[in-house]
Length: 243
Length: 248
Ligand SMILES: Nc1ncnc2c1ncn2[C@@H]1O[C@H](COP(=O)(O)OP(=O)(O)O)[C@@H](O)[C@H]1O
Ligand SMILES: [Mg+2]
Image 1: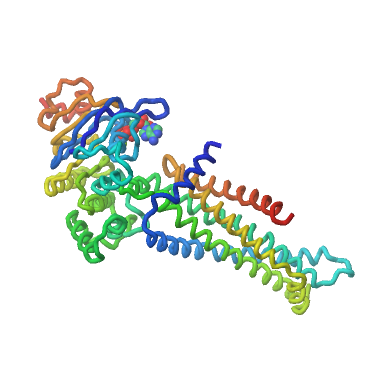
Image 2: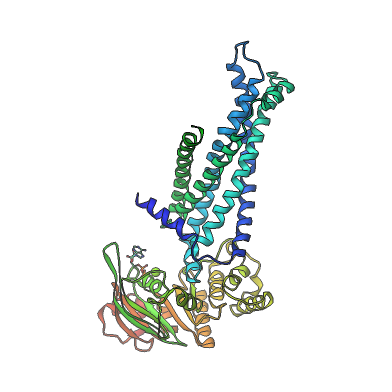
């Protein structure tokens, strides 16, 4: 509870005593590139595999001849967009992005780089954390969109290679009964998760005390806490927006 | 001149600084000495404003830093340079970018003026050849020198150094000490150095205060420190046989 208060205080100090806007612009772009290039491969691999697995498992469970085969494609689409792409991707990113943010800030704290900024009269919290949060808010929804596409593509590939479904049926299934709100919903999730991952990890890293060992602990705790936050937020958003 | 008056600071119920008053003179290397854990770093951090004292005040040439509002604080901060124990270089920036950083963030200079100033400061600490290297590629002594260059790049009036020769070999230590003293005299800076190094004390201690368990219990210069009759200071400086022999 005490650390939640400290977290809220940190978040509010991000927006006061800021430096020139141009400074943030450049830092944010740098962070975007870093997050993007760092994570795109793992996101691509994970999402195409889960798309493929969803396709195969759905087909295996739909044994009834009454259900047309194109339903497999619809299920892959729904699962990918609503849950797999945003949540799975963000859990993976909590590990990848979260640990890197916490590790970097933790190292800067224990080597007095944070103090060096403060002595210069720079608001170290906003200088270091704000670009990371902004970059996550930009990059993670992009990665989630990309993951959704790749998951569907993975499902398609598995369907064709496994002789489960024809191209025609798949395309038909992917398009039928398409609810556009699901894409909006996935993006809302992506934004919320992006904020949670980046801010929680930054919080853990920024307040690291001690030495190299504690930096490692901050990283681990950043990953665990942001994963839990993502899952809790996932559940809450589903309750809130789908009912 | 930097003054602190009746500084008290408590961490978690433990009093770390007890009624510390001291003044640090312009154009001199002022030393804060004492054993580990006696609050030297906390005192230094209080002077630069990283730690807020429970009571007492810090004055920069008569300007009260503890009571100053945001803008006044910012003005004073821009006149302060600090060399941290490990150098505290930004590890994602090159040596040159590290020195450039305060200018980029805080000054209104043109691009070429900034480049000239960075070049000048790197030359002053003898590192113009290392401008493009990353902090991970340079030695500890070089990192300290980059730290000094970064600390003086804004034409600082006040220079703080926390244990500038910790982790350095004796020869490099002496070079760093001499560099700090030269720069202090050259630019008439008010320099405050925290150290527990006997050598620095006797070399550059133009004004020395001795901290013991959170209190200032002695002040003087390198010329009268060996003749002290304060028991705790004697224990501190004559811990090594070499210094004992030197005295006799
Ligand atoms: N931020 C802090 N929170 C709690 N205790 C601190 C903090 N900073 C320093 N201390 C304590 O203050 C004492 C003096 O520390 P310090 O000034 O670093 O000693 P030194 O004289 O070796 O530089 C130590 O006992 C240290 O544990
Ligand atoms: Mg210290």
